[in-house]
Length: 256
Image 1 (tube, rainbow, N blue to C red):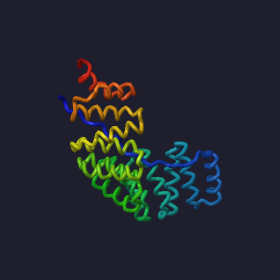
Image 2: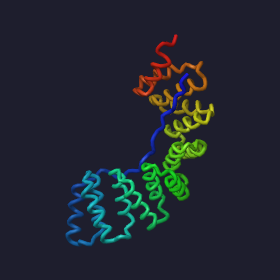
Image 3: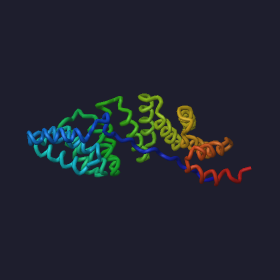
Image 4: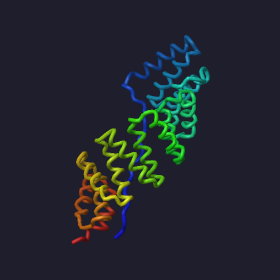
């Protein structure tokens, strides 16, 4: 019987969190302040942030650059520009900006988190893990850092380290569907049959999670084929998890 592999959820990403104001009105306000004081670097920064939120990315970058030109020690604008570079998928530039944030404020856990995220995207897992670890040392309750580091450990084939991080993530957020799902995947790779408990937990938390039914079916196929994996595959398909279709057709369509 073919041995199937499990899908892995991808890393999470910190975005801007802000209530929805009138960004165009804000841009006009900051433009007036800049006209009164052309060296008002904070107004350039805030105007850039408003432009970011209306997806005027070129305008945002121009304002962030101007703020840095006026004050090259301004932590917040390097952070904002780093987020913009991430949005534009310019992760090497983002790494430079978040590294500058760390130089200016070494206690910034979010700067370590974001530089780690960008390292993960360009495939530099060594520096990625190093920076997630630094983030965690500064913020021991950071669910996202544990979860993301766990994913990177998985991609590096360090399954036990990944399980450790997903354990930590679950301690912080006991209802994390993603952490249970990925811990189950890692346990399955490690031939740890308690993986089944994790897939069951995901289904308990989210009965509409097609991936969990698929993963439990694959667990049954690989470790206990006497179980009714076809029902789980059918359920996954019914929930629009289409990756289950190929396995269902291969293993269940002609099954008596």
